[in-house]
Image (tube, rainbow, N blue to C red):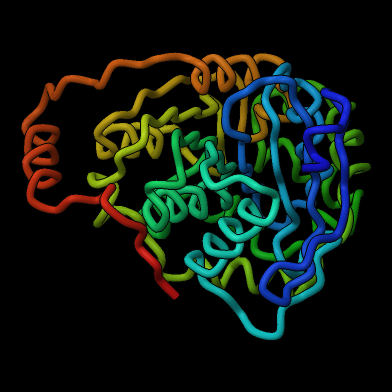
Length: 305
């Protein structure tokens, strides 16, 4: 396979057509022997916005693609659901020669990552959820923050981005104005229809009914000063996923951009470590364990359309 011949540390970007959908795909080649990390980005975000994090990975191979209608991936003919993107990502991984992957999702992409882990449990070894929530059932941001996120204007109007970045991202963006310019310079390709499709994809979607059934060891990362996804959502995810641990990062929503080295180190340590299963310590955990014995989830893949 040609990917194995690439020099570790390099990022290769190319167009790959999966199930008739052209995708702009970036692969950070690593030297490690473990499964690659399949990364789902935030809403409206082209893959280049994740480059600081990708550059900070030391040994892990990572795969990321622009969601259809965003960045270098053309708009699809019809709106889609999270299950559609999960299947598209699974087929992309298979096309690249990987039947098993570790999966990570950031913010909006965290919902797709949860869906992938649920839909393809045998193909998802470990799960990383960063600055995300269990769908529309989340504890929401304030109305003023949500209103600023309602359109992709921040991706197309750099002055507008500069005026709202601290309010929606928090953390280091409150104190270092230079971060805004660097982040804005990497933004491109967020189109109105593509952004609308991303909003529609998550309309009414929630993972709460089945979080208890996720079999993967899971790392939940939350920013302590995140106006967009309040940290309480990380506690909800960790409380409902049976084998999950929560790590708080002293930053805002975009800690993967503002603290890429620290975040990459946490994730790579988790992906490479042997974590014992967390012993049930609450009535909810014990109930989850009992339900898991009644409803097996790892015996096959859940294909949903």
